[in-house]
Length: 147
Image (tube, rainbow, N blue to C red; front, side, top):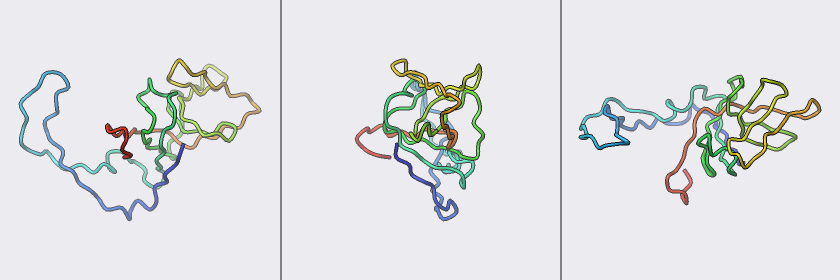
């Protein structure tokens, strides 16, 4: 996994994009409305704690059933305390991974969301460091183009 750290958030300029009041239908078409409700800054939408947020690009397919695909960019918040069921970025024995955290019943496990991969069972002598909780996924629909 490659990691892109978010620097001084205050130095980023805001980019307000129009947000339409009407939702787009994913089923049967509905007539389009021609007015804007407000503008939306993606930083505001995706980042709650700027000073403790970083991005990381996904490699591999162990989390596809959680909607996390290869080349996606994950928004990770280091200020959140990881709890049971959270998708986290962790270092297990010095190897970075993204998995779902399972605390109960013991032992602690890092679960892939793809049946082709095995759970990682954390033994008492293993070194596990949680780097943060995944809060959002950014995906380019053009797979050959990096977001």
